[in-house]
Length: 154
Length: 154
DNA sequence: GCAATCAGGACTAAACTAGTCCTAGTTCGG
DNA sequence: CCGAACTAGGACTAGTTTAGTCCTGATTGC
Image (cartoon, rainbow over all chains, first blue to last red; front, side, top):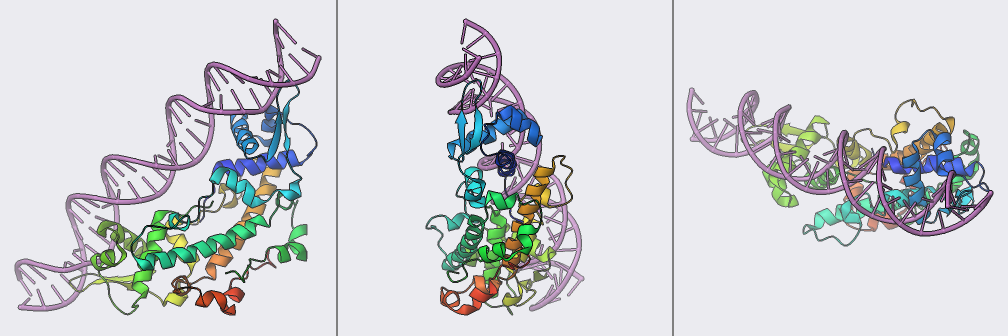
């Protein structure tokens, strides 16, 4: 119902592969093999992540990529930002809109609120949690408390 | 960061116009004028909404559209479903994916969880609330309690 | 110097979206 | 029963976006 580009999807997969051993320097070709994605695609994703400062890169024979931060310091929101941009859920929710009718803008602010709520939630989910093998993190109360949409602001 | 098509945006605007007087039968041309959208576009939106059962239509001279339910019985999630379809945040989160690598699927389920959380939230916001003139509903505790992401399930 | 590797960007093909328009069917009023 | 006012459905087009590939240049290690 809400869409996310494939690039973002790939990004999480690649980051996941990097997170397996955060210290190790991984070449794009290596990551491509491990993720079952094509090499050019992986490279493209990594370039984007590098520009966004989410991975560090090294050139040369023994070069490659590694995470710039620990997996629990990278949020889902950040990953989305890299390839989706700061695009809001509706156009109108970005800047002050020029639309004439005031009803429209009433609706606009409502979407903005929803948008912010979603964003806050995404900011509270880390790469580390995304990788949780299965429901251990789910059953526990930790995530439950973390995923508390800041309802007060809403 | 997450995108929603314009059609969905239009849909909320049109529904908002209809919600102004739920009993009244409104012609597409009338709604077009009130929403400042073009008539063909409004028609297209209304046809979609009609097929989805969100509005009732009547043909003929005094025909037009009206809401099928009360504004507080229509959720944001429903509105999204009409034009965005049941498309999930990632492709993989729809059905059992055929992707080989298991890491990928671990990530996939994580997105699914986020997706469901978002969906639950949207299901708890009604058209009536979307139309709230301004923050009266926001300050009060009502929405705050309503917008409680079902953290337990997460 | 050579091989491995990243950086950046150009380019293409495909998919999707928005928007328009046309034709057919339905209802009301005279 | 005829004509006007509507909706229903779908075909069609133009524009935008996305995914994916490829090429050329820069950097590093051996």
